[in-house]
Image (cartoon, rainbow, N blue to C red; front, top):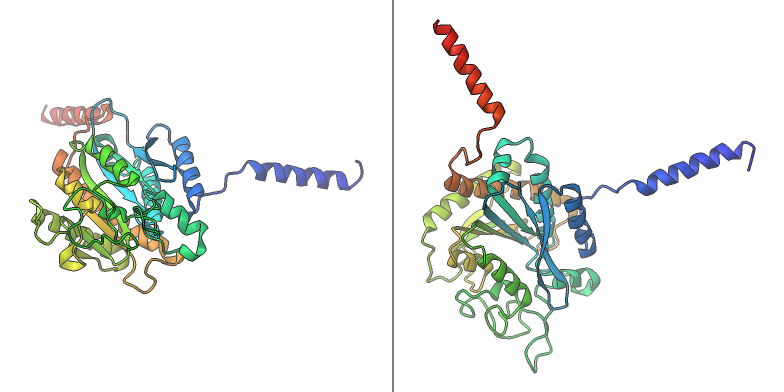
Length: 361
C-alpha cells in the first residue's frame, strides 16, 4: 500500500497494538463476578510477589477452590496474624467489595505509613475475598436468585431445597438459637456442626494456627453494626468489656469518615440471638478479638447497596477495621512494635549523641 492512506493505517495499527497490551485498571467501586475476583487475586500476587501469596485452603461443594491472600513482609521469624473473610452470605455483595478494597489500601499504604509498615513486619494478613463461592456465583448467574444467602449443597434426604447458612454451621452452641432445622429456611444450620465444606475449610485453617491469630474479622451486610461474641444470650466473652471498648472506638473511627453511625454490642443485645457463627467460634477457640461487621445500610437498599455507595462504605469500614487491628497489634507488641531499629535510625542516634558531646566540650 502506498499513498496518503499508508501512514494513517500504520498509526491506527500502532494504536491498536498499544491498546492491546495496556492493562485495564481494576475498578474497586463496582461489583465483580467471581471470575473477575479470581483474576484480580492472581494479578495482585503478580504485582506484589514480595508481600502477597495466594493460598488454596478448601474446596466448595460444587468443586470451586477456596483461596485467600496472605499479605505480609517476610521476616524469617514466626509472626502473628489477622484473619478477614468476606462473602460468607452470597447476597451481601458489598462484603467482597470491601475485602478487595482492604487489600488495595493495605498494599498502597504500608510503604509510606510507618504504622502499617510495622504491622506488615509483625503480622500477616489472611484475607478471603469470597468464602461462599458457590452461593456468590449463583447470585450472578441466576438473576431470579440475586438474594440467595446460603451455600449450594443439597439438603438432607427428602428435602428439595438447597443450601446451609454457613454462619450457623460452626461448632459453637450449634443448633440452639437463631437457627432452623428446616432445610428450606434461610437460617438452616446444616445436618451437624461443620457439615459444610466451606465452614470446614475455615475451621481447619484457622484452628491449626489459632495461637497466631490476634484478630478474626468477618464482613457482612447490612445494618451498620459491630457485633462481638457471643450470639447466645446465656454466654459472655471473658473479655467482653474490652471488646466493647474496642468496638466503640472502631465505631467512632467509622463515624469520623462519613458521619455514619454503627451500633456496637452482642447480637442478642442489638440484633437477635444466633448460634453457630464463625465470630463466636473464633472467640471460643481463643482468638481474643473477634468481630462481625454489618456494613451499610440501615434498610433502604438492604442487600442491594448501589455501586455509588461502595467507595464511602469501604472507606469508613476500613477505618473501623484498622482501629481494631491497631489495638490488637499494640496490645501484643507495644506501641513501637518489635521491628528492630534500622541502620539509618542508629546513625541518626549516633549523630545526635556526637552533637550533644561536642556541645559540652
